[in-house]
Length: 137
Image 1 (cartoon, rainbow, N blue to C red):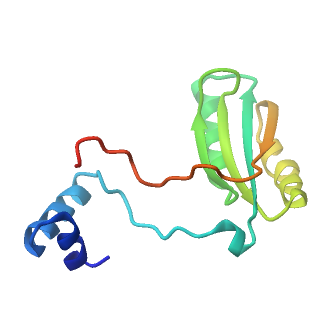
Image 2 (image 1 turned 180 degrees about the vertical axis):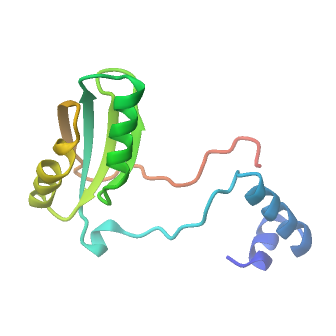
């Protein structure tokens, strides 16, 4: 939206609104702007949640895994986890066959992986991109 539209929505005049927006950007609260794309409409209807266990969890092995997985375009999110898995990935692919290719030719070729467990999403129930700010900041 334009600064004018934003200023009207939040009840500020355009100049203070733009100043606050620039402050949010420079402080790192706003890190980037994105367009949300419907994965189904661009041929990526399959969402897989992949849990990874490494055979060693020292800094070197964690860093190697993270560097490798960052390079895979199919990986939309990757989290270092507590519990049964060391990492959880959200992966988007075009088909189950494409997921198998991703798994066999990319993911399982990363050294140090001892276990891979995958669940496929049937449909999204809740999907949010906005942060739940409590104080209206």
